[in-house]
Image (cartoon, rainbow over all chains, first blue to last red):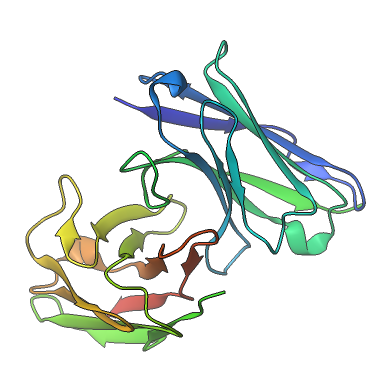
Length: 120
Length: 108
């Protein structure tokens, strides 16, 4: 059974960089799929942030592209998200997820999500 | 960027009845449309992809239809566990893929 688990600081100061990691178990990232990050501000809808392949190939949401970096560490079977210059608008539950098919951005395996609050 | 608009924002339906949720795209997304269910405090759950293909383990009472710009999610006979928020997502010519703002399905 594929399982994903997000980890990282729950509180980040404005203008700093948000850093999260998604640990994957039950499936090898090297076997394929574009692994994704999605976020959800409290009480609001879903926003796709970006996706990464095991080779390091990435797709980013243009609205966040200038501030986002997604990377992968196949040796640890995990992938990571960095979001720079954060503001209160970046406060959200951040999810990592695996899509249903290799090169698609609809997701059937999700982490439980982690709330990141941007505040001084 | 393709904008997805869901209607209604809130839908009140009695258990056992049929629920029909709508999703409209600002331009054609062909059949590249997915539906998710989300309950409070939980991650979204994929219900439908390809506009009409049920994901693994999804009950047959959930069905999706439509193509182009107009899509519908139908729940044929509502069970208590179906009351939740539902999101549509387009993934045509991504990135980016975009989500609708959600429809809250509540008990009447």
